[in-house]
Amino acid sequence: MSILDYKIDFAVVFSVKNANPNGDPLNGNRPRQNFEGYGEVSDVCLKRKIRNRLQDKGEPIFVQSDERKNDDFKSLKERADSVTELKKTKDKDEYHDIACKTWTDVRTFGQVFAFKGDSSTSVGVRGPVSIHPAVSLHPVDISSIQITKSVNSTTSNKKSSDTMGTKHRVDFGVYVFYGSINTQLAEKTKFTKDDADKIKDALCTLFENDASSARPDGSMEIHNVYWWEHNSKLGQYSSGKVHRSLSLKLKNDEPKSYDDIIIKLNKLEGLDVKVYEGK
Image (tube, rainbow, N blue to C red; front, side, top):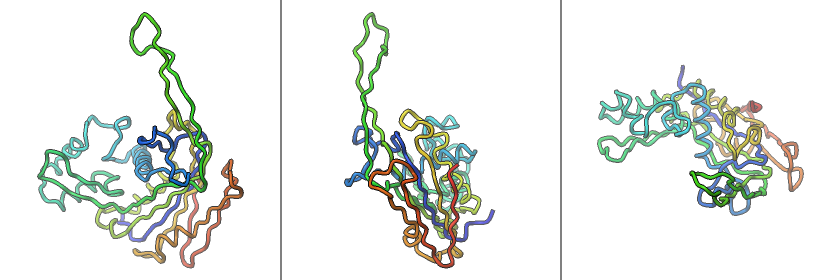
């Protein structure tokens, strides 16, 4: 498949209802918010979900989460060392190229190969796909509930005291995030047009196979993916101008459903946008 030779910009709109889209470990795992009360989902969290979707489709992934890994390696170093060509080479350019060829997420998002106790290799890969954090269109309300444990964790003659805990959720929110695919970096990592299509498909199905107690099935939904394909490597317009061409406004101050959002696309001359519904 040919290397991607045209710039791509994209935007993704999704909704959250009675779910925790991205807990903040520094704040009791409450859903992330900025100082103005708008909900946030980190770019790291979004990339994790994209990696998971690619992995579900059979793509080789370097940064696998422990609960979803499909091999027996206990660390990234073990996974890297399992590739004979990588372990043997001392040439950084060759290491870069082999890593990009081996793992889809490396040639997509990049990766730093620098492991403790191994001073012989330190290679950085810059990936062509960049993603912004997702931010809600409005301040979100967060509800918290107390939970208890009603069974003993260990054998005992008497019932242990109930253990208190707290679960947090966003009542409702509509979020948007933006991203771009850089052709100059695509040339370096050998990121192809087929890879770009895989990213697009992953965005359309971002929350499939992602359910948990904090995010029950159906509580997070992709509504639309906006996909701009430029006609050149540098693109006809800057990414900022392309992203601003998507206008998202509220019908009222407290939206209760996705229908309370007004979406308008401002046409950019010579640049068409394809709109895909979430699957």
